[in-house]
Length: 416
Image (cartoon, rainbow, N blue to C red; front, side, top):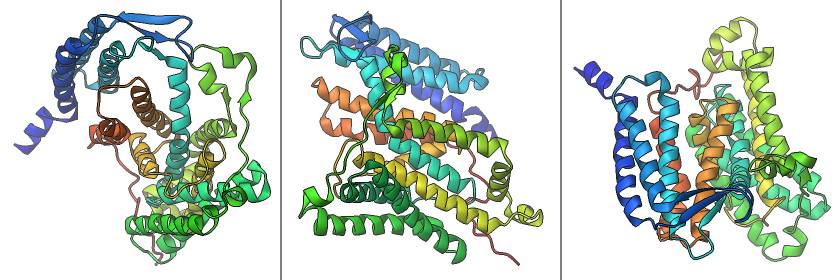
């Protein structure tokens, strides 16, 4: 009986039923609330230039209906191999229906959404998540759970701000931020691998340690003398010539700081290294079956030490992107982004490419709440601030029962 129920109401049908209901509600309510004015999705960074235009009320109804159709197809149970495509298309249609409602009711002169600006904001907000998720991939593919991403990002942000200010060099600030992230990883590695401490509890403790330590140093140094300790030089943007002029993707992919290009390079390098090199084969073997890897001559614990420390360097560099691009350091400035990076790791199925796509998804949710706030959305601001976290919950819950962590993830390895 349990098997029959599970087969009938598996993940595809649950997601399909949800999309069907949400799509119908969107078509009904968003269509009724939307104004009959043109909604423009411009290809540039402002309201000028080429645009895709649709009547607000018609668009809200049509895209809501499309989401319902995608949900009905999944609910029918005959489109399982197209699950990702239909679920993604349905979610996209719901978002566009929502935007048609919101933009059509924007103040006069603001009934447009600049796609290039939105894409650029999405990439900027996703960058720390990419670094954090890649750090998680390195650890968990090696069999070590990394809940301490939040602390690694925070220490990286603090190190980048402090040493960038003291040295007057953003490059030295970046190196220091990466090193501070590695310090957190060193503690994770020693206590998890050598002393066999529960890795989830250890990660939470390290996060609290990072919050307390950086908070104390911030109040003792930075808050008392901002100019001397918390005004790091910022990295300049690099523009890749005519490529930066491409519509929509140009300003986001081909015009940015070193962190943009470093993140893309790390994704490509780690994707190839994990699945095309001997190091990657050994890493995945240690994460799946460390005993078998040990019998073949792989030094399991040494490989885990190296990969966890490397993960700290990556996460620390991501944290430094906060303070060496846009902000000065403030207490607990990461604000839970490390846990969203952990969700991106799961959503991306423990692969670098998947982590990048998942981080972009969460970055878009963050950018969306910023955009809706800018056009005086009628949605309460408290709810808008919840959007990235709601997206995290829905994304991970939608994949429940489908993804599988490395078999030895979180299990200490003890030699005989």
